[in-house]
Amino acid sequence: MRGKFGIFSIFMVFLLVAPIVCAQDVGVGLYVLNLGKFDVATGSFTVDFYIDFKCESNCSPDFEFLNGRAASVDKIIDLPNEKFYRIQANLNSPVNLMGFPFDKQKMQIIIEDKRKQVDEISFVPLEDESGMDDSIAFTGWNIDGVNIESKEHNYDIYGETYSQYVYSVNISRIGINSFFKIFLPVIFIILIVVLTFVMDPDKIITRLTMTSSGLIAAVMFHISMGNQIPPVGYLTVADKFMILTYFVILVSVILNIVLLELTELKKHDLVEKVHRATEYSMLIVVPILYILFFIFFV
Image 1 (cartoon, helix red, strand yellow):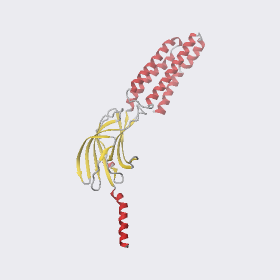
Image 2 (cartoon, one colour):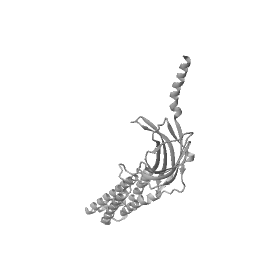
Image 3 (cartoon, one colour):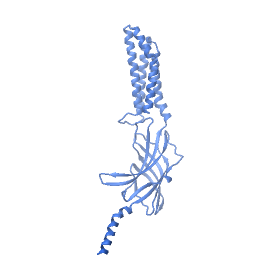
C-alpha cells in the first residue's frame, strides 16, 4: 500500500509541476533593415527586418503581429533550436500629437504567439542580437533609439494571458525644421503687430488696419497648419501657441479701438498717456509671454 501511495504521490506532483516544466523560453532577436514612411494620420508604416527565434530544443513559435500583418515571410534558417526569418510587414502604432510640432512617436513591432499562452511559451528579448541598420535614413524625423521589452498581454474576456515581444523605434520631429515652419512665420506676424504701437496716435487707422491684417494672416496660417495633422480631441502645442497669438492680437485690437474712440472724443491728453504706456511696454511684455510659453509648454 505504501508503495502504491508513493507512486500516486509522485504522479500527482508530476501533474502539478508539468505545466511549469513545459513552459519554454524563446529568445527573440530582431534587426531592422528598412523603415517606410510613417503616416501621422493613421500611425501606419512599413518595415523590413530579420527576426531570430532561439530556444534549447524544438523551437516552433507560431507567431503573429498584433498591430498589423506581414506582407511577406521568408524562412532562412530552419533548425530544431532556431528559426530565422526575413519579414516585410505593414504595421501601425498609436499616435500622440499633443506635442506637435515637437511630438515624439513610437513605431512598434508587437509579436505574440497565436495559440500558446504564457505558461507554455515566453518571449525573451536578445538585446545583443537586436538593433537597426545604420544606413536607415528617416526623412523628416530623428531616430532617437530603440526599446525592446517582453510583457504579458491579458485577454480578460477569454481568461487567457500571452507573452508579448515589443520592439519600439523612437522617433521625433526635427526641432529646427518645426520651428522655422510653424513658429517663425507667426513670430513675424506678432512682431509687425507689436511694432504698430510705436506709430503715433494720429496713425491709429493705419495701426488698426495692420493689426486686423495680422489677425487674418494668423487665422489662415492656423488653418493651413491644422491640415498637416488629423483632427484630434485635444490641443497640441501649436494650437496653444496660436491661442496665445490670438490673445496678443486681440489685446492689440482693443487698445487701438480705445485710442480711436478717445481720439474721436477729442481727449488728446488721455490718448497721449495711453500711447506712452503701450508704446514700448508691448515690446517688452509680448516677448516675455512667448518666452514663458516655450519654457512651460515646449
